[in-house]
Image (cartoon, rainbow, N blue to C red; front, side):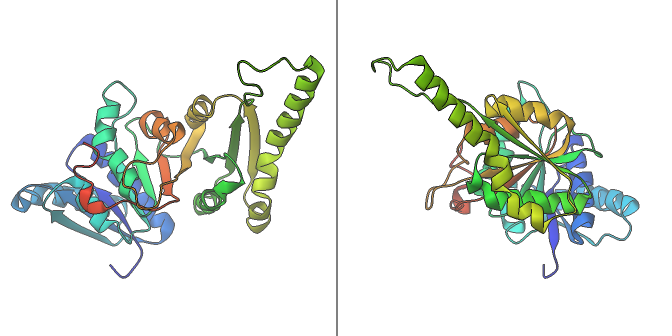
Length: 287
């Protein structure tokens, strides 16, 4: 496609319908077309599902350009092909619960492992409207992801909430001789002041560039997984980056990314920041 487009995968399920509705809104926000994809073993069977998806979208978004196509093979490979040049790829995932990890592991986590562009994972319990954009900020190394979060806030006419969670480092090896309590306290205080300043300095240039975006920053001494998951309860979308090692296929590393993809209370907008693996192995590499 030569015009900007958003790709979404459908299969006739309620979860896929939610993803379809969200993808249509995302396409409108971006001034893009909507590309609906149904991966199926026999393309002759795809007609009713695709027709239903197109009809639903055109009824709700009559001015949105829509295309629909069937693709033979697995959903991951089809979405990777269609979404290679997409402004955004959208997939549905089951909501919270014991079975969520299995569903995410088969589609969403693989897409996060191999997608070369932004990926929106829509859970079954998402709220369709309201809330700010949430960004989990680790350090100033997250500049590209932070810029993407600011752009998302502009698109949605929303505020941006930046959360930086941190913990004290292990100051001493287990068998090290004791250090005077005052020295330890001073070191911890210096570390706390440094962490408190991270959100302010890391996005200073972006706040100046996007002066119209209302930004709230919060620094908490807590595990980042728990803090971010709690913050997703009130967010419209959470933006998270995933670093990949050059030349290595496989899922993005880090407990925060995995936890959000599995348990977030709002849709997760995953922004790859490293090198994608070989998409040709996406169907088998992750099991």
